[in-house]
Length: 636
Image (cartoon, rainbow, N blue to C red):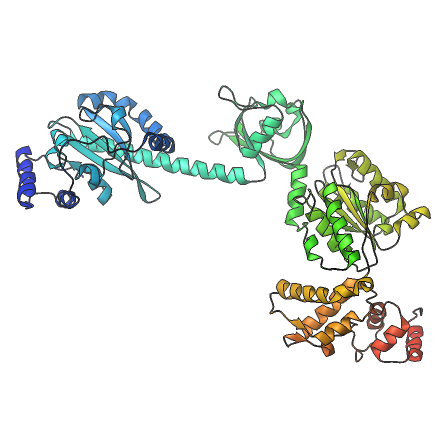
């Protein structure tokens, strides 16, 4: 706010009248009058500025670091104005939102050296009414005549303050103070202050945008580079700088990294081609350096200058293939869902198995899980992975049953379908983590032998390719049969057996740990309620006793199925014995007599035992034999 010149004598009389009688003259500017009243209310004593009211040296150093960008910008901005400042005896203060002087530019402040003024508090509590406090309070530029200032020392000059806003809040107050009492070009000084305010606000907004971009780029799982035509890396995000440092391209104060110095095949990469205007998108690239050979998925985007055809620079986004596989694996949910703690049981054989699993998880060996179908080998594999040093890596599963040899080879090792298109297999996807091979005994010997070779060499090759890629995988293999006997009978590859059998864990069947069934029931029903966000249910003692007396030919998997059926089909909060069907959804009144699929499910649930199935279905053995013959099934 530019104000008309006022008689210094009149203004002093208004001030003296207020100090003496507490009367505000009608000619006093309302904002000044308000500031005078506030100064008196706070008992601010007029006089000299007390430079002792300042922040400590450590706090001032911290403030200088915090506001260094604003200080440096203003320092550059006023360089061309040096003569103007000298001519009108101006000093410029950069004051923060707490009214602490961060920086004093140009001339001394009323005899106080620039260095001495920095860190001094100049708010309403310290110096009373001033252009600083008024501009801070009202959020507007304000020119204040010296005779209106509360502090006697400051009445010998003039002052102008403008607020600097950032994110809608007052960030700074820029204050120009002149030691002259008259003859100042108020309009020119105010215009200069407004220009500096606008410039500083734009500078702060630009820096915030850049910092936001840098934070975003640093948070991405990709390395991002801005490369100039001579190979100089003008910018790299955090991951990019880390990768450059790993290959010897360090950034220092004297020079920036240059790809020509460290990438031996630089002229054959998509970056070099990018300067010819050739973009690349998600291209698999090999980078040869003195330290190591890398494989990346790389995108290169040429940038032209002013819309012309000439390429001025390129932006490069890349990710190591190993990192990409891990990212994809996690995105696809290839992580451990269960911990060892989720496996409950107190019997001696189970505790012994669980303790061994915890030890094996830490030693890093490949693992073979032996046990009947349904004993919980998959959950145990999850727990071992989660308890291992590979827990941060992916857990990939390959079920070896029901796959043709050709499909298994593609799934395991990957395949190249053309010169340009190639897909990784699960062996590569599991690199850095664990590959769980379920029913490994079903793996053809030729594929098993090839897998053993890959694990021994630490390298894998996709089908239809000759490119060797490094792998770092831990194998957890699960087998329902005795894998050693199968190997001795030459039904399983001996080289793979030798690798996966370094640590063997035998999982006991449920019938050998009946005392654990009550606790398993409670745990499983609790898990069902939690997973499906339903109210918890209890299982009656009679139902628990009934379940504990069963042989469970399909082990925990079958118990889980029976409990799921009872949980979802019982409306009450307690599951009674009558709610339990050991055949799951196959009930005696089901149409099993006419539906072979239903009968087969019941047959499997009874473990292929005629007497057990006859009791469950409520028919005689003779009747059951008739239906076994009808459906073409063997009796046991």
